[in-house]
Structures are given as structure tokens and as C-alpha cells.
Image 1 (tube, rainbow, N blue to C red):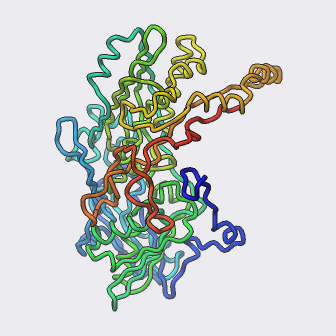
Image 2 (cartoon, helix red, strand yellow):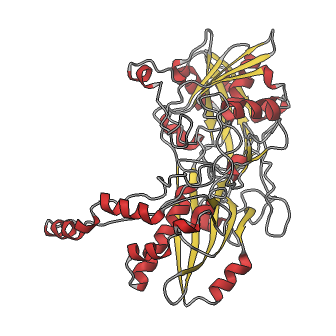
Image 3 (cartoon, rainbow, N blue to C red):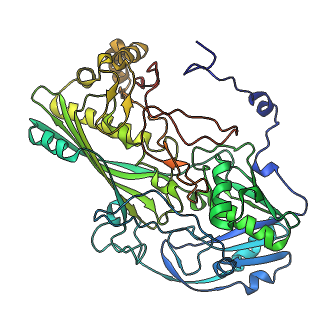
Length: 525
């Protein structure tokens, strides 16, 4: 294989340093004279803030400042916003409520930040945070995705009474309806993909400083895309040239997508550092991370498969509810599962397909890309449906998959939802996986397990992965959404490093690997 061939292994250079204890993680970074920040967060999923009294907290020894949303707003700082051109079902623009750094009037999920305490030590900041008196008036809330858009559900935002932020469609609806109309059999299922959150080796943190002489910020942060973070903070929040803000990302300590972009703590520490004239450090407690971080997944899919009399796939139809949480702080809340749902047709010949996703607001943390960024949801839906349909119709799930796989001779293959597969030998991969798992001996292993009072099963998924969804560069180099591009699949673009360990260019491959080595997950034993 040539030096720059697709699939060429890349030698890891960081391992010796990390294995010898030479890692430099977020908490390892400290600056002279730094102060420590702690956030006061809402205990309510939905409530009006009647008042905030910081008098007792500010009077404690060592406390440097106690800031509220009113203080932040008084300084005229901006907020990032979503830029993707999504719409509601009636054609009106999407409802994308921006996320304030500190909430001043109404909290909308458990963990919404309402005050920032800065002190000489972490202990002093924690003690003061407990003395911040917030008078809340609790409001009805909706946290379940399947209830968010039902009639009578409490609105997360009064301006959006039905809690529907926008809808997203892919595929040919008319062609798909025609395929279902002539189907000999239709199999329907509802699958729930639960909300999840990351638990990294090291929780998030931020350390900010400000040089008044140069009027320049520096942010040490454990993020995966430092260039995007810099762009968002400079252009949308502080409205300064990007040259006036430096973002340094060392060893991230586990990211999984959740540490991808900008968080409110980045804005707050930078702002506080400038106001106080000294560095400010915030470290998320592990018990705090479930409240502080963006979450992943949280969607419900009603999926249908249309079959002819011989069991050939004719069409696929998916109606999904996707919770995006209480805020749309940037395009990040619009990426999953929307951008990767095109691979819900999997590796199969499905002539017609249509996907309709309703993005709903709820009194929960905002959702964003996490571990697969929508890919696992798409594959789970189609593979689970095929297994359930096989059981319902009395078919062998492996033989049935084999009969509907895309043949190598069909390549390049244009799927009905957009992605173009340039190559792939899916049946070969299936055979290889079955051989590696000793499928022929599975029945004997199952019988032996049964004699021991144990259950043994076999699962199989022919998974194809869209490597990234972003392919159309932003129209402005000063993008305020933090997004490098929009999630439109493209079959001809490739991922390009920008020179930073943790920042990538605006385009990415949206087709299976050229040797089709990643198109099948082996059966489990």
C-alpha cells in the first residue's frame, strides 16, 4: 500500500509519553495567581426565577465575585446561534432558542447555570455557592421525548407552544408511499434509543486568562475542536478578532464528541478573568457532569419495512421524534441524528425510502454528537427491524439479509436517502464474519449452554458508517454557529487535517471505505 493510501495505519506517537506519566491533562494546567470558579445550577427542570440574593455569598472570606445573568447581560456579550436552514412543517423558520451563559429569568432544565462564584480557593467558592439564595417558582415541565409534542404538553418556551423546533426530511416520499401501497407485507416497529451522557477519564474544565496590555484572551480547555471554539467565542460572544483569542487544548482526557465545541463555562471563565484581572479556573465535578454536559441520543423511531411476496425489500419509512433539549446553542444541536440518518437503509437494496424527523424541545440538557453521532441509531433501527421482521415472518435472519444485500456489481450504488456507496463486498464480509464467529458450531454451543442453565444468543448487524456529515463549507469565514459546515452527505469529499491534533477541515468522507473492511460487524458469541 502506498504511503498515503486509504486505510494506511497511522503510527501513534503519544503513547510513550502517556504511558510514562507525561500526560498534561486539563487539571494539570495552572497559572500563577489563578482564582477558582464554581457554578450554581438549577435544581428544577422548569421554573421562574423570582430573585437571586448573593449578599451572604459575596461576604464570605476569600470570595472575589458572585456573578448573575444580569451582570453578564450588562456587559453586552453575545450568544452563539444556529445557522442551518431548517424549517417547521408549515415552512416557517426553525425555532432555535439561544443559550445564555447564566440564566436570569427562567431555568429550563436541571443544571441550568444561574450564578458564577469566584474565590481564592475551590473550597471557598463551594461554600459561597451554597449561600446563593435563588427564589424559584416551579413550573410544569416535560422531560419525556414521546410526550414533548403532545397536545397539552407544557411549553419549554412560550414562543413555541407545541415544542417542535423543526422538521427534517430525506428521501422521496411519493415513491416510498407507492412502494408501500403495492407491498405484500409491511412490518412495523417502534424503537426507543435512550438518552445517554459521557463519563470521561477527566471531566471538563477551563482555565482562562486575559492580558489587558495586548487585549488578548487565552483559554486552556479540554476540547476536541479548538479552532471552532475560538471562532465561536471570538465572533459570536466577545466580538473580537480571532487573533485576540488563543485556545490551547492539551490532552483531552476522553472526549467522545461531548467535549467537541464551546460550552458556557468557556465564556464565563474568560469573562470573569477579564473582569477580575487574574486567571480563573473551573473544574467540573464528576457528579456535576450529568448536569453540566450536553447529552446524546434520545430519540424514538417508528420504522416500517415494505416487502414483496418473495421477501424482497421494497421500501423503508421512518418517522422519528428527536429530543434536542431546552436550547439550540449552535448548529451542534442540529447534527444528530439528522446528519447520519441516511445510512438507515444499511447495506441493503431498498429502492425507496423516506425519513421524517421531528425535533422536539424538552426540559432536559441539550443533545449533541456523542460516540457515533447518529450512526449507531441508524444501524440499530434497520438491523433490529430486520431481526424482528424475520421472527414475525418465520425467516432465517442471515439468509434473508444475504438475499437483500447490495451486490458488488451494483457499485457505485446510489442509496435512496442520499449517500453514494463507491464500493463494497457486503456478502463477502458477512461470510467472513460468520466464519470468524464459527457460526456453523453455534447450535452446539447453544445446546451446551442450555444444559448449564444458560442462554446463548447470536446477534448480527451489517453496519455501514457514514464517516461524517459535514460537507458544505460555511458561507462565512466568521461563522457564529461553531459549525464548519452543514450535514449534507457527499460521496466525493475526504477528511482533511488542518494541522491541529484536534481540529479538522470542513469536509469529510460520506461513503464506505474502499476495501469495505468496516461494513460488517461480526456476530457476537
